[in-house]
Length: 349
Image 1: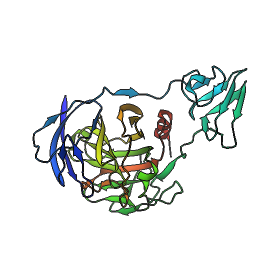
Image 2 (image 1 turned 45 degrees about the horizontal axis):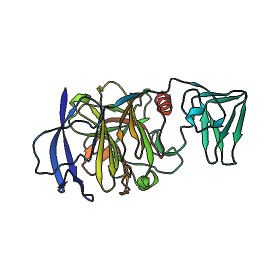
Image 3 (image 1 turned 90 degrees about the vertical axis):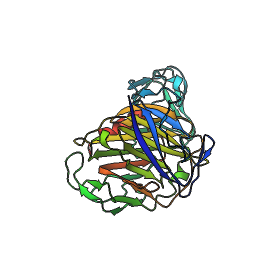
């Protein structure tokens, strides 16, 4: 089963070369995507090419689910950061109950922040230096660049001062039915600008994560126009939905685009959680309502074009707006683990 959509692009400050063609200033080309999660690298076409294209994904995506192992036990002496030291063959995360068995010595390396829900020491836990840290419990504020809970305004709750400027968007009820705790966007000219968040690309040249709640005002499969959730900054990293798919768009050096997408059905009656976790050169992870999808690798060198602002509900290069509601938007300068995405989805305030 396939579904077609149109990509409309105007590259005001960035050129791109793909398949030997130089993009003109603007183009409109029809693409055909299958109904499976996909990743297309360097997907740009000369404006003279008008026929529909049928593209095959370069890899078979896999579903990514949170670790089932919530009780992690040491198997031998070694470093905390070594997956083979632990019974689940993975480094513990904030939600794990950790037990260090008698006779085992586990060392947290210099400069390392180790995470766990709690730690039971039958053996010995060693801190290699004063920069070795153990954090227990949820750490959803680690690496948080900006957070927009929309508690009556568009202020940044992270403490970093990246407050938003609202243009047209109106306060509305959130996913819990609480009034004035989310913003509604009309799809015409409503948006929120964050003028201080302009150096995001330079601060996340190796990894980043995005998280947001949204409720569309049109049936998801009927949305033939891109609905922009978040554009960071000036479209370098974009999260949006269009015609039955959620998209993550990442620009790479020297100015070409990577698309990552997952097919999903949404309705106008429900709120939905979407998140992504990205590290340069590693598989991109998209999460839709807690379900994770592992897609193609992120660019090894992500673009560092700064632009002039980050935008919520609007994408400046192509001029696409959001039609629907947005809430609880978070921007991180690190990867989120599957368990952390689950924790964000489960938050009740």
